[in-house]
Every structure is written in structure tokens, then in C-alpha cells.
Length: 141
Image 1 (tube, rainbow, N blue to C red):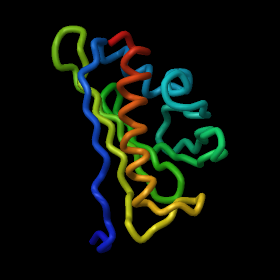
Image 2 (image 1 turned 90 degrees about the vertical axis):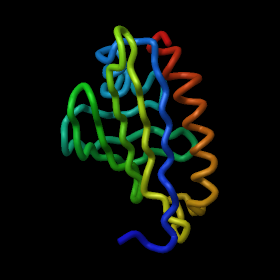
Image 3 (image 1 turned 30 degrees about the vertical axis):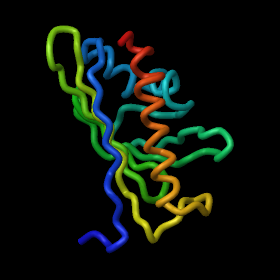
């Protein structure tokens, strides 16, 4: 049962003007993720432990928890967060991409001593910028 301090997941959905195979390469390869998110040591293998190089915040430990090419990948990020990328081919040459960032709790702090309540709002806007401003142009949307 979720704690009283559970905050809603961040959910972002966008229609990308690219086929699902191209979007999958952008979100399920180390090179692709580095191009729009951050440098990393990701490998698309369930159980693979990797790091996301978050610049000023250092390296964040991550672990692939589920993968179902080319439709879904889940990974743990840091000590509390869960990231899901969902892909669905919606029509010829277009892909619906949904990001879900869960694991928020009003009673918890990040590894860097910042309250989840504050960081959730920052990340909510940050994901908008990353998905619309970097992922979409990267895949040609």
C-alpha cells in the first residue's frame, strides 16, 4: 500500500513523426539515450546495472527491470525512482511515446538531499523539455 506521502507519477505522452523502430533505438540504446537524455552505460538487457551521468549531480545508478522490444522498457533510477518508456505504433511512420516517472514520495529526499516535492516539479518541466525539445527533433519529429 502506498504511503500517505505518495505523489502522482509524472506522465508525458507525445506523437513522434517517426516509425517505432527508430524511436526504440532512441530510447533503448546507450547512444540513443545519450543523444537526447544524458550520457550513460545503458544496455537493453533485463537486470543490467548501468549509470546515467547527470553532470553536476554525478552518476546515478540504474537497473533495467523489464524490457519488451519495441514497446516498453522499465528501469530503476537511483534509490526511489522508476522510469518507463512505452512505445506504440499509431499509424504509418508515427509512434506514440509515453514516459512515466514514478516513485515520488512527499516524505522522501533525493540522494542529493532535496525533497521529492520540489524535485518532482523540476523534473516535470525537465521531461517536457527533453521529450519535446530533444527526443522529438532527434527522431525527426
